[in-house]
Each structure stands twice: as structure tokens, then as C-alpha cells.
Image (cartoon, rainbow, N blue to C red; front, side, top):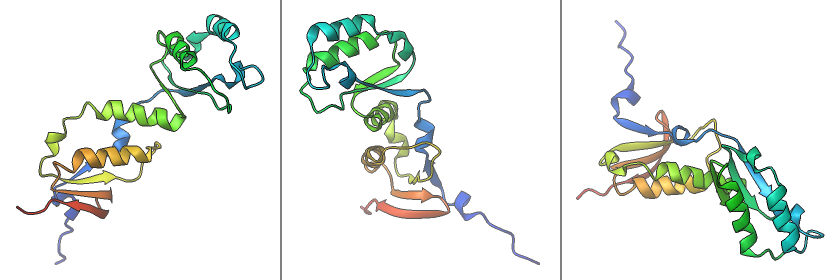
Length: 170
């Protein structure tokens, strides 16, 4: 008789924390105001206000938007504020920064709704492979949030983990 195959992963009590589960679907776009600057150097208030009035902001409806200026120019803060005001009725969410910074903030908002105490004394594997790009900052945030509660914290897949943290025995 052959010994039965035992699934040690299932019997281990490991909890897989899959960041992909917290990804918010939706189109991500960038508004780069560099093209609204005179010679990509100077913001002319009247021209910029005309742009704000005439631009079709409805194209950003239900989108995630990163607002930036990639020109090496000094742009007054109120210019970005005007863009934010124009976007507010349409965009799902917006930030100042890059697409990666936008993605980080979207994840942070979602992860901010988690009751981390549910992971008290749990053995947790933060899943490593994902079909979506998860910013490195989010792995740090999740580590910071889980460590106070977890009995152990690992990275990877339940069948192949990298140990990260083990709560000291009292």
C-alpha cells in the first residue's frame, strides 16, 4: 500500500494575503500640465485659466488620475489646485504625482479599510506573484500593518516562502 498524499500547505494553517485582491479596477491616466506652459517654462495665469475652462474634463469620468508637470519649470501650487477642482466632479480619484504614486495611493485607501486585528497570531504569507503591478511601497505598508498582529510573516507562495518575521515567544 502506498502512503496517501498529504497536502501540508492546507494543513499548515497559513493565511495567504493576496494584494491583488485589493487592486481597484479602472483606467489610470496622467494629466501633464507641461503642455499648458508657455515654451514649457512659464505658466501664464490667463492662458491657464482659459485651458481650465475649455478643457473637456468629462473625459476623466470614473478614471484614476495622476496630475503632474514633467517640465523643469516653477509652477505655482494654485495651478494644480485648479486642475483638482476641475477634475473633482468627474474623476474617481486623483493625486499629484506619477502613475506609480497614484497606484500607491489607491492601494493605501483600500488597505486603510482593513481591520488588521483579524490577523492576530496568524501565520501569514504575503503573496508574491500577481497579475497586477503592486508598488513596492505597498509591500512595506502591509508589512508594517501585519507585523504587530501576525505570529509569523512570510513572502511568496504557500508552497515556497521566504520567512520575514516571527513573533518572539513571551
